[in-house]
Amino acid sequence: MKKYTIPTGALVAAFTLAAGAGAIPVSAQEAEPAPNQVGQLIQAEDFANESNPDSVEEVTILDSNDGGQKVGYLTNGSWIEFPDFDFGEDGGESVTLRYSRATAGSGCVLITVAAPDGPLLATFGLPSTGGWNNFDTISFASVLESELFGSVDGVRDLYIQFVDTQNPYVAEIDSFIINADPLHAPGLDHQVLWLG
Image 1: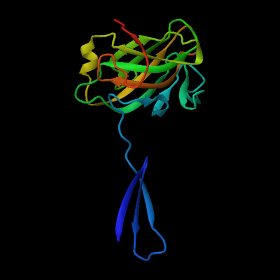
Image 2: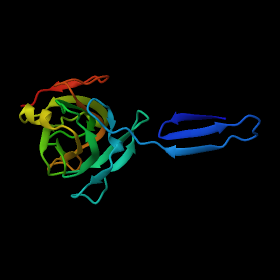
Image 3: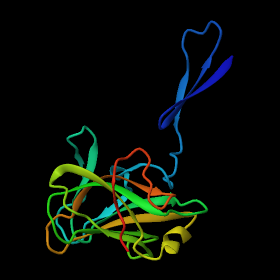
Image 4: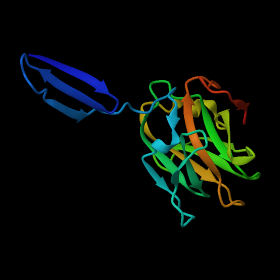
């Protein structure tokens, strides 16, 4: 008898072939997902936890016009969490974010670790993209001392928070990357914003 293991995404199927056997016994067990890490494109809808304290609406996963998904109903004070984010030994140097925003004004994003009110790694404004279905991609370095962003290493809980005190909704988020380079976004066209 030979035993075969075939990875199939989130499941690993294992089966055994026996000579002359009429049936093939198959068992499946869930594989450990790869941790989110520096340099990896992360879909916003893969968040683990969320909070929308200033709204009766919950942070919601919505369908995008491009066939994918996005995170919406992000209001002032809401956040999404990505636990166990692996910053590696060198940390990150910049962030790339794909988002949409229908309104102009004061919308911004904060990136923290450990807790929503934990150490602040970056903060940046979100210019209007002209509509909720018009996505743009921006890259930005930390507006704080660049050494702070780079000094975060190891595995930490990562939070993306949304702030806008003038409009009901801040943005809709498609994906993001914590980049190892100061301003680098592999595979994404983007507008570079130097803030600081």
